[in-house]
Length: 203
Ligand code: GAR
Picture (cartoon, rainbow, N blue to C red):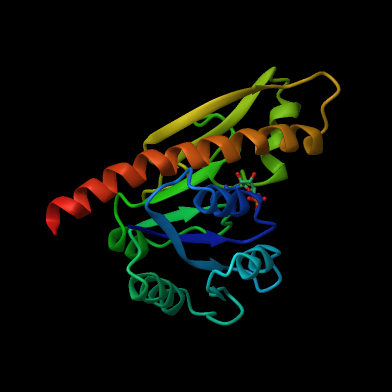
């Protein structure tokens, strides 16, 4: 069984896509053991509650000291035997100590075709506005491993969407989100197989 922890900050449509895919068996032999939000007001917390998933907040408000926040996050995830950490609209940059604790086991969904429109300052709607401002005709989404950089880890899956002449940041975001939900679930399915196989060979 693959134990997934999901880190969120906002509305949580990507979290919902994972909850639904686990519930209907598209992600076999997996469960979401915990949802942690960096923000106490995130709607993601309601989605976790509705899905019967333990959820908590670890953010700047309750852990203002960065090192203590990182340690709390590591402990929370280790306590529920996390095999895979999924950043699903998580808007904080993780410290090296966190990356070291879960190396090769952290993935992120980003709303552009990395290496375009990523890195510091490129998150959420800003990404889509930058794509429109640059006159791009194609955008998309990327699932990648998380390393010490911002959006620099190896790419797992990417999918394109067309940018339409009448697009606003909102309409483009909505079209990219549909693709995010698809590739995030697909990436977790293949990682689940790989990690479950490894776990079985160790036991
Ligand atoms: C998604 O578009 C996700 O790719 C993006 O925030 C949105 C969260 O939506 N993440 C980033 O920009 C991270 N750099 P959601 O809360 O509905 O899943």
